[in-house]
Image (cartoon, rainbow, N blue to C red; front, top):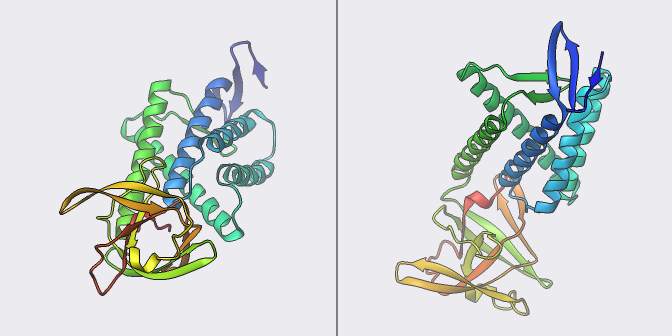
Amino acid sequence: MTKFTLSAIYNKIAGGIFIVIYVDVLYVINFFITFLLLLATARFTKKGRNTLRFIISSALGGAYSLIIIADVSELFSTVSKVIASAVIVLVAFRFTGVSSFFKTYIVFYVMNFLFLGVIYGLSLLLKTPYIQLARGTVYLDISARGLLLSAFFAYIVSSLVIRIYNRRLASGEVLDITVENDGKSVTLSALSDTGNKLREPFSDYPVIIADRALLNGVSDGKSTRLIPASTVSGNSFMLSFKPDRVSVKTSRGNEEIENVYIALSDDMKSDDFSAVINPEILSV
């Protein structure tokens, strides 16, 4: 039996237990959780973040959660969830290739499991079993403050897991990177070093520091920007440009880095490498 009221309450009997679900709360909960899931997925895959696309995808996630009030079979619910998740990922990150899509799709599901595990763990720790599951949809019958705290805590935990994982990736290794721009390309040996924390201040994109002499011709004709940097000799500015494409050869294969700047340096004195890259900008 279903019942709708002007206060947007949906009542039903599930497994012999009477539960009350507020449809508006259900939508808002899943909107914010979907948004945080997309942020975590973007951090893990190092894909660019488009706020408008994330909002639209989160709205779709909130709308899909209302399937909990529909009288559909478990099979239909499972299939529709797989399809809905694919649409959410496509809207948020666009389609840039089959391999890239499936990797992002899998990471999105991994983040779902991580979030649910953290939130459920909190409920057990605090002895507040507030989670209701129906047809794969989560309903948290808690206050808005409790919801936000739980969701943000799950996001913080996922961010810490990602940071720890990234710090273990290729740190200290020398990787081959290829910089392409205006039909020209150059391959450099790049030291993977977490000490390179440079970011372009307007876009917040990460920066790869490279030997200026080796990029002569490749950076020509590209608009440049000055990036503030701190060195042992003091504060200075480094000329940088955004290349058309950067690919990195790692132990897991070739990987393309999206949204990155190349800072031109005259101080690359090592014979072992001609660029410095932060391993945290690498994907899984």
